Length: 514
Picture 1: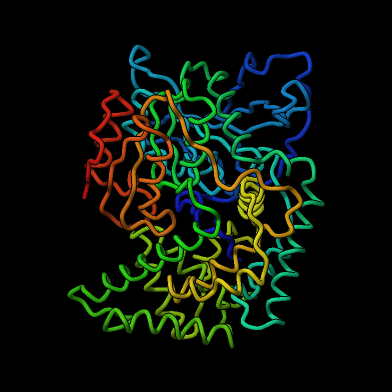
Picture 2: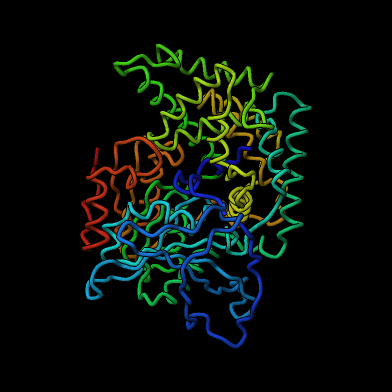
């Protein structure tokens, strides 16, 4: 099901492997101890839990470096720092260079919210080989996520039903059914996760990162945030401006927008990505197998979705590919240009009555593994967003807004608009209209915007720079496709980021890479 921020999930996070036994996470006491003095017991990493996404323990890096995992205690309620604690899961790969050259730890958040850093960092660790020469690479499952006191809502079977529902209702009966199903999901979250739900705001995660900084032994937090991780990084800079070290924000969330504005921006962003996909397919020397013109490619997709609404086709047995699942799968494939070939293949098959590839893409977006188990990606995503965002939109409001969303994107507009009801009946009130990231006195944050980013549109980078304040945000533009810039392997982007993180060389504001 769509959610105004569901499509914000980083492509890295959503393609990470899924894990086996969920650890409860709550417990212990900090009444007599100083949590900043705790010592982390680093050991070889276990296989990930089901909530993290399942799968096997992470393989060593190409040079043989083993991934190590540890648990850090943090207050359940940061307003009671010596009260009950929760366990936060951490992972690291130690720096490869000489100790005399080591800067400290570089902490990653790959987005979501709801993505497991413990599973995602090993999946992409080789991409950061240059950075590991001077940093320990570190990531974590934020509170409410994966192995860190995970939010739990519905069972795997219930989630299969949840993701099969019609997320773009067309009449009063369908709207009532959609709203009722959303209420059921939210009620399950409250019933099964009552203890952690009030404590998963981004401000809580930012305070956890500052505790992590101290426990890791760093005077400053060196940070690499992607997608939602840019919002988390901005909030950290606001709360702890004097403790910011070298920080990079890539695939930037616009911190000034309401959820409605964010959803509308994503509709435009995904439509732009779809336009670029259609142009790419039809401009090649070989024949595009899904249409001879850009318009034909998009028209055939619209026809497919309309047909699926009336009659789904076989997906992955026993599930069928519905309009919602197909839309979700198409959106997932637009996160990276590397996925466009899978979208072409999936559409070809779907036109022939086979929905397997598009359903696999949809499952990847939703955190479903091949064995039918779900990570807690969706539960955590909705819990964190609804705790952060004060706005509550009802079905009547969305209905009035549909023409504006449809104008922004005939394909994704209604899908994203109806996602705005996800927080309407949430048990915990939202914190603010939008996050405060103003950070006077902070060290520079390198802010990277990608002109072809569907999930966090390019304009968000400029908004983040302005919101951080004069002299704090340094903007770099990447003229490319997909969600994020550094992992596109663009040499210009990577050189600028590496020079900043490794040598402290801040690029000139307004630098453009293509």
